[in-house]
Amino acid sequence: MSKQPIGRMDEGTLEETAIADYLQGNPDFFERHAALLTKLKLPHNRGSSAISLVERQVAALRDKNEKLEARLRELIEVARGNDVLAAKIHRLACRLVRADGASSVMDAIEASLREDFGASEWLLLVTAAGETKLSKLHSRHLRILRLGAAELKMFETLFESGRPRCGQIRDSQRDYLFGAGTVEIGSAALVPLGDKAGKQAGAALLAIGSPDAERFHPTMSTEFLARIGDLVSEAIGKA
Image (cartoon, rainbow, N blue to C red; front, side, top):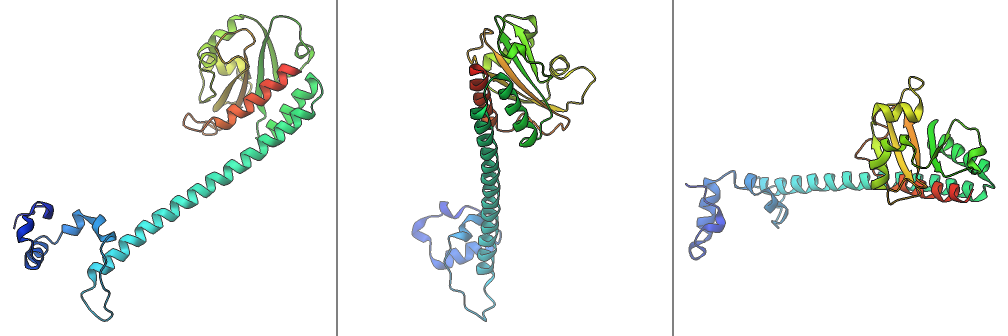
Protein backbone atom coordinates (compact mmCIF):
# COMPACT_ATOMS: atom_id res chain seq x y z
CA MET A 1 0.00 0.00 0.00
CA SER A 2 1.22 3.46 -0.81
CA LYS A 3 2.43 5.51 2.16
CA GLN A 4 0.09 8.30 1.28
CA PRO A 5 -0.34 10.81 4.13
CA ILE A 6 -3.60 10.08 5.90
CA GLY A 7 -4.63 13.71 5.58
CA ARG A 8 -4.86 13.28 1.80
CA MET A 9 -7.34 10.37 1.88
CA ASP A 10 -10.94 10.95 0.85
CA GLU A 11 -12.70 11.86 4.10
CA GLY A 12 -15.90 10.24 2.79
CA THR A 13 -14.31 6.78 2.83
CA LEU A 14 -12.35 7.27 6.02
CA GLU A 15 -13.96 4.45 7.98
CA GLU A 16 -12.52 2.51 10.86
CA THR A 17 -11.53 -0.40 8.63
CA ALA A 18 -9.77 1.98 6.25
CA ILE A 19 -7.84 3.52 9.12
CA ALA A 20 -6.93 0.10 10.48
CA ASP A 21 -5.80 -1.06 7.04
CA TYR A 22 -3.76 2.08 6.54
CA LEU A 23 -2.00 1.78 9.90
CA GLN A 24 -1.35 -1.91 9.36
CA GLY A 25 0.18 -1.18 5.99
CA ASN A 26 2.18 1.72 7.36
CA PRO A 27 3.71 0.52 10.64
CA ASP A 28 6.12 3.46 10.63
CA PHE A 29 3.31 6.02 10.57
CA PHE A 30 3.90 7.13 14.16
CA GLU A 31 7.62 7.23 13.53
CA ARG A 32 6.94 9.86 10.90
CA HIS A 33 4.29 11.61 13.02
CA ALA A 34 5.71 11.27 16.55
CA ALA A 35 4.06 14.51 17.65
CA LEU A 36 0.65 12.82 17.42
CA LEU A 37 1.56 10.49 20.25
CA THR A 38 1.50 13.36 22.73
CA LYS A 39 -2.03 14.27 21.64
CA LEU A 40 -3.65 10.83 21.65
CA LYS A 41 -5.90 9.93 24.56
CA LEU A 42 -6.24 6.15 24.78
CA PRO A 43 -7.52 3.89 27.60
CA HIS A 44 -4.80 1.97 29.34
CA ASN A 45 -6.24 -1.45 30.19
CA ARG A 46 -4.01 -3.19 32.67
CA GLY A 47 -3.18 -6.69 31.77
CA SER A 48 -3.77 -6.07 28.09
CA SER A 49 -0.91 -6.83 25.74
CA ALA A 50 -2.06 -4.24 23.23
CA ILE A 51 -0.54 -1.25 25.03
CA SER A 52 2.46 -0.49 22.83
CA LEU A 53 0.91 2.75 21.62
CA VAL A 54 0.27 3.91 25.18
CA GLU A 55 3.79 2.95 26.20
CA ARG A 56 5.11 4.91 23.27
CA GLN A 57 3.01 7.90 24.28
CA VAL A 58 4.35 7.70 27.83
CA ALA A 59 7.91 7.48 26.53
CA ALA A 60 7.37 10.51 24.33
CA LEU A 61 5.91 12.49 27.23
CA ARG A 62 8.76 11.38 29.48
CA ASP A 63 11.30 12.53 26.91
CA LYS A 64 9.53 15.87 26.55
CA ASN A 65 9.43 16.25 30.33
CA GLU A 66 13.16 15.53 30.63
CA LYS A 67 13.94 18.16 28.03
CA LEU A 68 11.76 20.71 29.84
CA GLU A 69 13.44 19.89 33.15
CA ALA A 70 16.87 20.27 31.57
CA ARG A 71 15.86 23.63 30.13
CA LEU A 72 14.49 24.72 33.51
CA ARG A 73 17.76 23.75 35.24
CA GLU A 74 19.66 25.72 32.61
CA LEU A 75 17.50 28.80 33.17
CA ILE A 76 17.91 28.48 36.95
CA GLU A 77 21.70 28.31 36.59
CA VAL A 78 21.68 31.38 34.34
CA ALA A 79 19.50 33.25 36.85
CA ARG A 80 21.82 32.30 39.71
CA GLY A 81 24.83 33.43 37.69
CA ASN A 82 23.14 36.73 36.92
CA ASP A 83 22.35 37.23 40.60
CA VAL A 84 26.01 36.69 41.47
CA LEU A 85 27.14 39.16 38.81
CA ALA A 86 24.55 41.70 39.91
CA ALA A 87 25.82 41.46 43.49
CA LYS A 88 29.40 42.03 42.33
CA ILE A 89 28.40 45.06 40.29
CA HIS A 90 26.47 46.39 43.29
CA ARG A 91 29.60 46.10 45.44
CA LEU A 92 31.57 47.96 42.78
CA ALA A 93 28.95 50.72 42.75
CA CYS A 94 29.11 51.01 46.54
CA ARG A 95 32.91 51.24 46.46
CA LEU A 96 32.80 53.96 43.82
CA VAL A 97 30.16 55.92 45.75
CA ARG A 98 32.36 55.84 48.84
CA ALA A 99 35.47 56.81 46.86
CA ASP A 100 36.76 60.30 47.61
CA GLY A 101 39.12 61.51 44.92
CA ALA A 102 40.93 60.01 41.95
CA SER A 103 43.19 57.77 44.01
CA SER A 104 40.23 56.27 45.88
CA VAL A 105 38.40 55.66 42.60
CA MET A 106 41.35 53.70 41.22
CA ASP A 107 41.63 51.74 44.47
CA ALA A 108 37.93 50.89 44.31
CA ILE A 109 38.18 49.67 40.72
CA GLU A 110 41.30 47.64 41.50
CA ALA A 111 39.73 46.01 44.58
CA SER A 112 36.54 45.13 42.76
CA LEU A 113 38.21 43.67 39.67
CA ARG A 114 40.68 41.68 41.76
CA GLU A 115 38.41 40.43 44.56
CA ASP A 116 35.07 40.01 42.79
CA PHE A 117 36.04 39.36 39.19
CA GLY A 118 39.44 37.70 39.60
CA ALA A 119 41.11 40.13 37.21
CA SER A 120 44.73 40.98 37.99
CA GLU A 121 45.58 42.21 34.49
CA TRP A 122 43.63 45.30 33.58
CA LEU A 123 44.23 48.81 32.36
CA LEU A 124 42.28 52.05 32.40
CA LEU A 125 43.16 54.09 29.33
CA VAL A 126 42.06 57.73 29.52
CA THR A 127 42.53 60.65 27.13
CA ALA A 128 42.86 64.17 28.43
CA ALA A 129 43.48 67.62 26.98
CA GLY A 130 45.72 68.64 29.83
CA GLU A 131 46.63 67.98 33.43
CA THR A 132 43.97 66.16 35.45
CA LYS A 133 43.73 64.61 38.89
CA LEU A 134 44.21 61.20 37.29
CA SER A 135 47.41 62.46 35.64
CA LYS A 136 49.00 62.84 39.05
CA LEU A 137 48.51 59.19 39.94
CA HIS A 138 51.19 56.54 39.46
CA SER A 139 49.61 53.16 38.78
CA ARG A 140 50.40 50.32 36.41
CA HIS A 141 46.66 50.08 35.82
CA LEU A 142 46.34 53.64 34.52
CA ARG A 143 47.57 55.25 31.31
CA ILE A 144 46.86 58.83 30.26
CA LEU A 145 47.02 59.84 26.60
CA ARG A 146 46.74 63.23 24.99
CA LEU A 147 43.70 63.93 22.84
CA GLY A 148 44.14 62.62 19.31
CA ALA A 149 47.10 60.39 20.22
CA ALA A 150 48.16 58.05 17.43
CA GLU A 151 47.77 55.02 19.72
CA LEU A 152 44.00 55.53 19.75
CA LYS A 153 43.82 54.54 16.08
CA MET A 154 44.12 50.86 16.95
CA PHE A 155 40.90 51.14 18.98
CA GLU A 156 39.02 53.35 16.54
CA THR A 157 36.38 50.77 15.55
CA LEU A 158 35.80 49.93 19.22
CA PHE A 159 35.10 53.56 20.10
CA GLU A 160 32.86 53.89 17.06
CA SER A 161 30.74 50.92 18.12
CA GLY A 162 30.52 52.08 21.74
CA ARG A 163 30.00 48.45 22.83
CA PRO A 164 32.21 46.05 24.79
CA ARG A 165 34.11 43.47 22.78
CA CYS A 166 35.35 40.10 24.01
CA GLY A 167 37.69 37.45 22.66
CA GLN A 168 41.23 37.39 21.35
CA ILE A 169 42.64 40.78 20.40
CA ARG A 170 45.29 41.82 17.92
CA ASP A 171 48.90 41.40 18.98
CA SER A 172 49.49 45.14 18.71
CA GLN A 173 46.55 45.87 21.01
CA ARG A 174 47.59 43.19 23.51
CA ASP A 175 51.20 44.36 23.65
CA TYR A 176 50.19 48.00 24.01
CA LEU A 177 47.64 47.38 26.77
CA PHE A 178 49.33 44.67 28.81
CA GLY A 179 52.97 44.86 27.78
CA ALA A 180 54.94 42.84 25.24
CA GLY A 181 56.19 39.53 26.66
CA THR A 182 55.35 40.39 30.26
CA VAL A 183 52.10 38.50 30.81
CA GLU A 184 50.24 35.81 28.89
CA ILE A 185 46.88 37.07 27.64
CA GLY A 186 44.65 34.41 26.10
CA SER A 187 41.53 36.56 25.87
CA ALA A 188 40.43 40.05 26.78
CA ALA A 189 37.42 42.27 27.33
CA LEU A 190 37.62 45.80 25.92
CA VAL A 191 35.02 48.19 27.33
CA PRO A 192 34.78 51.68 25.79
CA LEU A 193 33.99 54.39 28.34
CA GLY A 194 32.78 57.94 28.26
CA ASP A 195 32.29 59.11 24.71
CA LYS A 196 29.90 56.68 22.98
CA ALA A 197 29.76 58.55 19.66
CA GLY A 198 33.24 57.47 18.66
CA LYS A 199 34.93 60.86 18.94
CA GLN A 200 38.38 60.59 20.45
CA ALA A 201 37.95 63.66 22.61
CA GLY A 202 37.41 62.37 26.13
CA ALA A 203 37.40 58.73 25.03
CA ALA A 204 38.44 56.13 27.58
CA LEU A 205 38.84 52.39 27.67
CA LEU A 206 38.78 49.68 30.34
CA ALA A 207 40.76 46.62 29.23
CA ILE A 208 40.65 43.36 31.21
CA GLY A 209 42.93 40.48 30.26
CA SER A 210 42.96 36.80 31.20
CA PRO A 211 45.44 33.96 30.51
CA ASP A 212 42.41 31.74 29.82
CA ALA A 213 41.50 31.80 26.12
CA GLU A 214 37.87 30.95 26.99
CA ARG A 215 37.43 33.47 29.81
CA PHE A 216 36.26 36.19 27.43
CA HIS A 217 34.77 34.73 24.24
CA PRO A 218 33.05 36.57 21.38
CA THR A 219 29.63 34.97 22.00
CA MET A 220 29.36 35.88 25.68
CA SER A 221 26.86 38.49 26.83
CA THR A 222 28.42 41.93 27.32
CA GLU A 223 25.50 43.49 29.20
CA PHE A 224 27.22 43.32 32.59
CA LEU A 225 30.49 44.59 31.13
CA ALA A 226 28.58 47.58 29.75
CA ARG A 227 27.15 48.26 33.23
CA ILE A 228 30.61 48.09 34.76
CA GLY A 229 31.79 50.48 32.06
CA ASP A 230 29.03 52.95 32.86
CA LEU A 231 29.92 52.93 36.56
CA VAL A 232 33.64 53.37 35.92
CA SER A 233 32.98 56.10 33.35
CA GLU A 234 30.87 58.10 35.78
CA ALA A 235 33.39 57.66 38.58
CA ILE A 236 36.45 58.80 36.63
CA GLY A 237 34.46 61.67 35.16
CA LYS A 238 33.86 63.04 38.65
CA ALA A 239 37.26 62.14 40.10
